[in-house]
Length: 188
Image (cartoon, rainbow, N blue to C red; front, side, top):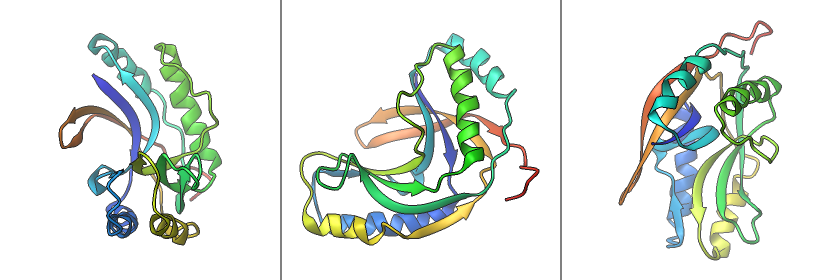
């Protein structure tokens, strides 16, 4: 099964991101595939195909970690690799040391099971669209309009492993397990 590790986003922040997505959709650029608002999340690690016999021990090891995480600030919008020829549109997350440490702990457990570590630096974000081809200037203007926008803050309560099933309408995510974070003793 295809699986990934993610943090869920509160509905009020999803709604604010949805306003950006809907504004982009109004431009009617057909080569952009938007993420459904209910599917928005912060991906920590894409695991890819995972064998069912690996799942139990992996979940057991994830249950043993519980890093503290402080409030995440959902801020700005942009595109990878850049606005000149974007491939992925995103909403960003301000740098957060405790969140980066949580990612490292999750990455260490995943490596133990043979999952390849990320080669790129950890830059948490929320994917809002995937782009094929060129975008029109009006679309770029909408993304730039949100480049300094504050979507909100929240303290994540934990991380989940999701199964991803692809169908003709898009991906369907099913939560397989949830692992709580502990409260940060230094506050939010």
